[in-house]
Image (cartoon, rainbow, N blue to C red; front, top):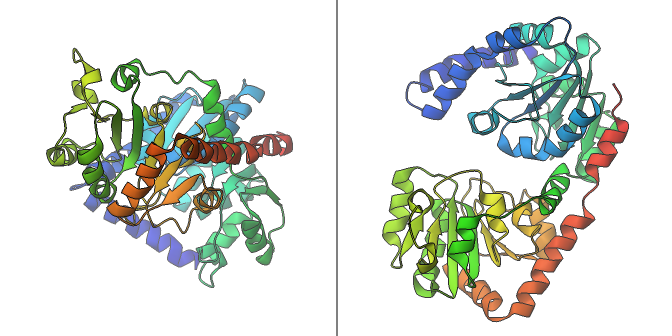
Length: 411
């Protein structure tokens, strides 16, 4: 199986180089990986003691951030190396202060793994969730280096638990300890004879709860919202926007305003949505020297401000589950004590099931169901406040993962 895996990695390298000719995102990853080893060699000396954090993408980075912060605080003299596999993580967080060096993770070949570990020689390695790379982890195990996996979430259909997943299963043995989100994940690991497991929960709860202690003010949204009720639709895809558009056209006004933060901020996609609007709208990129208060719809054609934007929401809609792209982060709005609406495809997201059960979140299949739940919450402030409070209680109840993880880390 290991031989097949290594052949597939080599083939993947060739395929990515070909696809990069036509895909901007893939091209960034291919080009960025070429710079990884020069960056590491130029910034790490043989006297440095390093800690390595690895995240697949931006979501895993946000998930691991509260743990990263505590490690950085506990080991201020260590050099922190942060790696991403995806351009969507690297490009947004390449200048993060949590790390001294930020790079793309090279493809998981034996040669790349040996070279990477030769340079970094991490005293501690922290992987987030389930971005497991066998050659890198086997190299760590071979050298008896300390590694942990945090916020892991496993399902029976993952390759680790299949007959063909031997290489992936063996990679898990490189982790000195795995911190999982739930009992199901622990049980699955136990069944493959991995027992160094702690059910610590999801570090995302600690991450989002810490947002309440930050300054979430956005002056331009203050100007836009005024005293109106505001619905924020975050990380939307066309499938989400298709069920929102009718309601916005019928109900948007000075008293009821909408902020749309699309996942894809390409100008062509945003223009397509704007053309469907029958009410005035203003985009973030056009806001300067405009009287924002007169617009009922605001389009966030920018990134990095969604979390703070949820602070201004009375109701949130979170995209991704109306189609098949995957539900986006519902905890970010929930922590502000507001009710949340999502689409119908949320099966693989345990927090969605739990917030729906607590009556803080509602799922809709079409524009008619969306209109019913929005009308209910808009017309009944008490019901809206109750649902929002259920979400905040849920967040508070599930914090504490970071403390458990840090208590078990000693380097």
